[in-house]
Amino acid sequence: MAAGGPGDHPLTDIVNFNLKVYNSECDELVREISKLVSRHELYEMFDWFDNFSATEIQLEKFKIELKDKLEKLKEKAKSNGWEV
Image 1 (cartoon, rainbow, N blue to C red):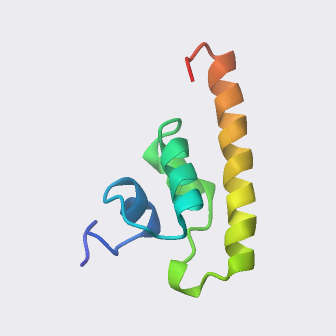
Image 2: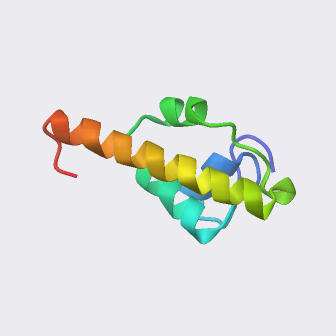
C-alpha cells in the first residue's frame, strides 16, 4: 500500500503501525528514539534498509548504532532539562 500505509517505509511501519520490521530489539530502540527527535530527524538519522534483505550481522550492527544514538539523545535531553 502506498501513501504512508503499512509496508511503505520501515520507519512508519515501526512507529505508526507497530509492525515487526527488523527484530524486537531494534524496533523497540527505534520507538524509543522516536520519542526524543522529530520524525524528519529520525528519517535522516539512518539508512533505513529493507528488512527482507537484512542479515543477522547487519541487524547486530544496526542494534549497536541504535543503542549508541539513543544514549546520546538521552544525555542531550537530560542536559537540556528534559526528564528522561
